Length: 154
Length: 412
Image (cartoon, rainbow over all chains, first blue to last red; front, side, top):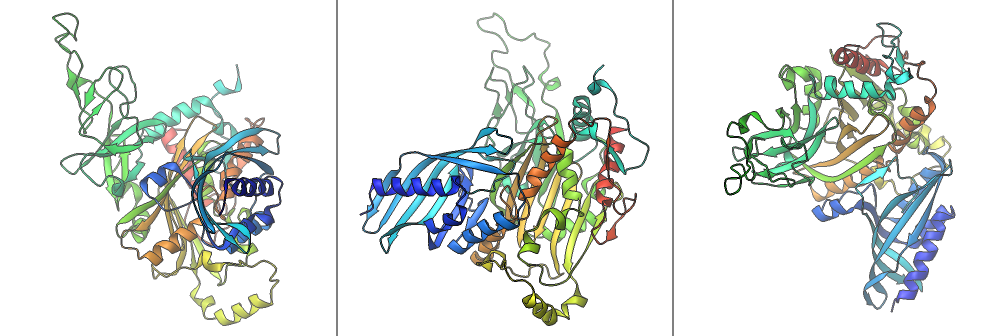
């Protein structure tokens, strides 16, 4: 069974990978055929399927990190993910569903920190070969507005 | 006297020197609202597809002026200022919904779906006390109404009685290029707002600036995704305010495709997409145009990048802030596979788009860069000083076109 503690440990490692600029590790938190999407609450409510990031494979997440490293141009910045307590919705065998709130601050090269996003991860987890992985993560932002640009992942 | 109270000084009648003060001057911002957004222009408001039924409404903006746009029982679309005739409060608070009529929450003055003031709470007073004077005429009070024009499912509104009809406003070439994309019913598949830390004009110029595309946006070149030689061009309409920039497969180069593919393989292949399904697409226009960015003065963009379709609405929020509303589209008759293609290609656009995220930041770089240069000018001379259509994209003709229309409307 996947329990709350396992999810907490997963979230802690996930946030640390992004916030410490170990972005190349980020796709490893996902299953090979995982879905990942960033949207907001109004699109979800209306059933609109698009995301500002929309991936249906781990390879697409790897491509996104590669693009951030070598192709896309954006001002130097860091994120700080503060993840709340997971709400374990369902746990059966090697699968689980959970909802976890996030608060993400963005620290710009100028030194200024602002709240960049708040919202909730709607997650489906699987355990494969003893490792917990995301089968699906939808980051549902509370705000419909993204300030300037979203480069680093939520 | 401070800089901000000085009229903006243009170096001459030409369009190659743009005073930086235009991007931060408060009085200019006020004048733009009156002369452009509430002047003789058509403001994009929403899609007809977003007003499907009698009573469907959306709240939006014409520039900074809040607007309600609504479909009435007669099937027609109406729009009026979202401002109660009494004390000026917003009449409709939600982004969208369905309404029989509208009622201001403050003192319950009510309005029809055509924007007419129809009811005043306690109009006759209470127990013979108070109430509005007998001579008060409701017909003489109401929020300002907009003229409405629709074209290919796009809903435009204007505060001007004098603005030409929408097709005349757009001109033949722009109409054709809109029809090319919006030739059948569309569906909204997502909406996102991007807050830009810059004046609205910097974003509009960026849209029209075909010169920056291959220099700032390195995604396609880094991953060597331009498989076939492309040719492109820029169309600027007579007013200067509307433009199309496009890329298309060059039929001459296509004949050489096998050679080109071979040449590519010998190139440095350090960077390759691990999941190229991101860009897997299908042919749907038959004219070889892989990218078409179209703008309508003052703040509307229609975009086709391969199979990725969107409209963008540019809304000023004070002189140094802009909201960019992205509405991602599919066709109503898309197959599930086609829809999936659009969803995947939408990684290219929006606030996190592989080929558009830079545009969210670059306007802010200018806004910050010019903070001490109010008496200096931007240089817009690539491709000369004209505002005419041309082949190739190493030109700023459509940026100059924007300023031609801008100076016309601003009488500057």
